[in-house]
Length: 300
Image 1 (cartoon, helix red, strand yellow):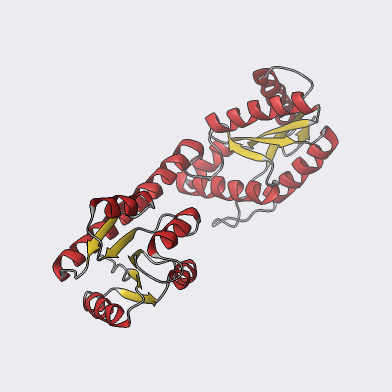
Image 2 (tube, rainbow, N blue to C red; image 1 turned 60 degrees about the vertical axis):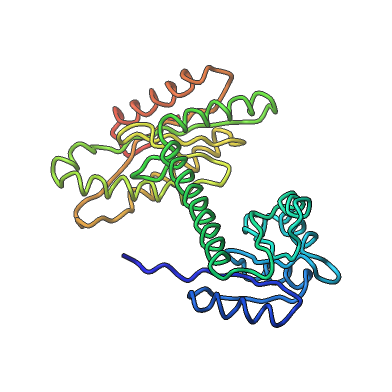
């Protein structure tokens, strides 16, 4: 099991004795410590070091704890850092005010070490759980959108991207083209070299496409060895240039088996008002025309 890095806590208090006491307590628990002696300094240090948690005194001259908390919570860079108020105030109104400004908890002074450490660990754990949840959410979103092998958009999402770009092309009366291509003799690759090498081919083709397209373009794995590129603001002559470059780049790829060479056949179509499925079908028909004409070529 990998060792997790120590977590960092920012201690904010205008009394040096309190800072030293908290610092000593937390360092014994292997936390990394940064300190600040004012609200303004706390904001500056928090932006710089991005602590995992802030222990924030309320009663400070200048920018007090409430104001510092409000500023930190308003900044996207520091908004998610949990803040625990340290306060001599124990009135309900003061505690509620702290929560309203964005604090996750409070500990009254003089504090009990066991209680303080328990609150710190609880909120560090909750914060980490939230980060893990966000990471899992992002990974799930990738699974929904992307093909796991090639890292290109999957069939469903590339179709959705094409539908979206068709609407944009209609609305702004701008050109839109698609390229549909298929790997030549790919079944023979799997039969001769095995599916591991077949996967290697698909991965390298995916990498080639991601390198070739612009940020505004979309590249997807439409089927097993069939790929679809959506090129907004691109007319037919420009799309042909792109497709020929991709064809030559893929033909130049090298693989773990030095004798293996891959070529593609493709079809290029510019949008002229047809339905989405018809648009794709036209590119597909040109793809098969390219195959019938000898492969390793682009038809338009």
